[in-house]
Length: 120
Image (cartoon, rainbow, N blue to C red):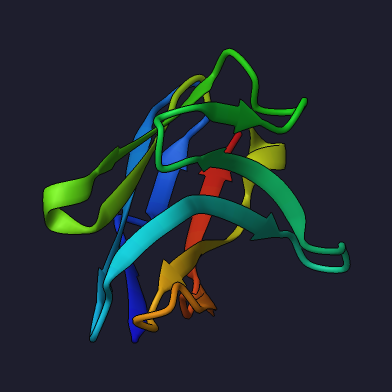
C-alpha cells in the first residue's frame, strides 16, 4: 500500500492551495485519513484528520482556515488550505489507517511529503 501526495508548491500569503493524497494497493477499507506537517527544525505537527464516518478534527493553528475532506470512491483525502501564512510553510505529510487484512488488521501508512512554501 502507498499514499501519494500532490498539490504542494509556492503561494503568496493570503492565498490558497489544495493538497491531495491518494491511497493505492490492496486496501479493504480506510479508517482515518489525515495530514501532518513539519517545518524545518520543528517536530511533526498534526494538521487535520477525517474519519470513516466523516468526522473532522483540526489543529489549533489551522482551525477556520483549512478544510479536510475525503472521496471514499477514489480513496483520496484533500486538504484545502486558505488564508495561508508564512508560518504554514512546511512539508505536508498524508497519513492513513488502512484496513489491509481480512480480519480487520490495519496498516498505518505515510506519504512521502509535499512541500508547501508561503511567501510574505
